Image (cartoon, rainbow, N blue to C red; front, side, top):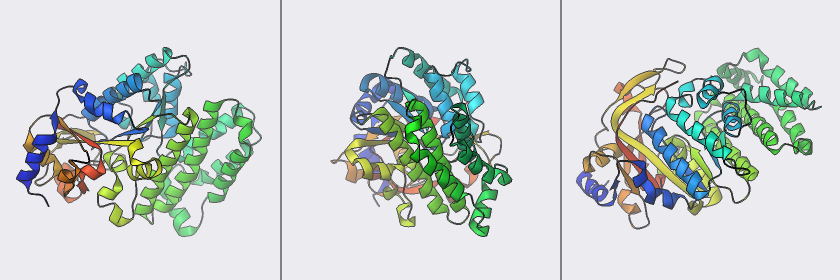
Amino acid sequence: MIKTNLLTDHIKKHAVPFSNTNELNPLIQKASHAKYVLLGEASHGTSEFYTIRSDITKQLIQEHQFDFIAVEGDWPACYEVNRYIKGMAPEYSSAEDVLKKSFNRWPSWMWANREIVDLIEWLHKYNQTEAERKIGFYGIDVYSLWESMEAIVHYLESIKSPDLEKALQAIECFEPYHRKPEKYGISAAFYGEDCMNEVMELLSTIKENKKAYDQDPEANLNMNINAIATMNAEHYYHTMVTNDNESWNIRDRHMVEALQHISKFYGTSSKGIVWEHNTHIGDARAKDMAREGMINVGQLTRETYGENNVYAIGFGTYEGTVIAGTSWGASAEIMSVPKGARGSWEEAIHNAGAYNQYLMFTEENKVLFSSVIGHRAIGVVYHPELEHRGNYVPSRLSERYDAFIHIDKTSALSPL
């Protein structure tokens, strides 16, 4: 492992201080050449991660012709945002309105927050100036089993499709589990009582009759992704009670599959911006996940599209506050983020300068930042007093990301 004082010297030499996002232009210019720009976050509850990603996103759209944003969120809820920003949802009066009404699954504050309102309103106004090239906003996570099935049923009803019966059979199979994924997972994994056949038949029917849905390409995309989400969510919940690592892999493979379908919808030359946690966008091969047989979006996109077509930007902080819950489903709380642990990347960057700064990794300097050092990751469930036991992921920073943005002191997100 590299000596701490030597690492600090390397950071001082290669990091660039910044006080506002206009000073991130060199990083944004470099990222703009990729097909996918992956924007991470060390937590889902930090204000600055959202606002800085918003500024980067706006610039990539305005100046570098990026076509869509794909986020770590449920497809059905995010699709309502997509409808709003494209002027297809007169039932919503504002960005705040669509966010409040669409994001109901815990943790709703990941997307129903004040920081994201500005970006959604900006996208809405931007799309009004575009006759054909309207920017999209989509959720590529896998959790929306029941919501995706309901969306399929609603669409098939609206067009009076003969495929409706298959969709109703699938949703009926899941009814006894009362929208409780863990209940379905236990039943499927331990008692062999699953709905896999119903889901596969629905997906097969939709694929066979896909020409019937081609009249409205956006609605067709919506139904196809909901069908894929239904299939992969069933697989995810089926697996999660017996194999946590494999359920993670199912989730991240689904994200990349959804990303492929969105890209196809926008055309072969389309470019996308992905918002997800560092644990998803930072290459799994550069941390301890690889030893456990786990993959993620960062690894899969690099392998699929080539490293030159993917630019991953990690985010981190030395200290501050964050929004999180003490358990799954608990009320959101403002919690303190302790100072970066001794020997961590967060501490090393802070010691190089107690200010905001970014690192861009190149072939020339990558080796200087390739030591395996702890890197903080905060989830939606968080216990600051216990973070030394499991919130630091051994990482080779320059192999995990193409660039890293450090915000020295951060503040909690503002839920709506």
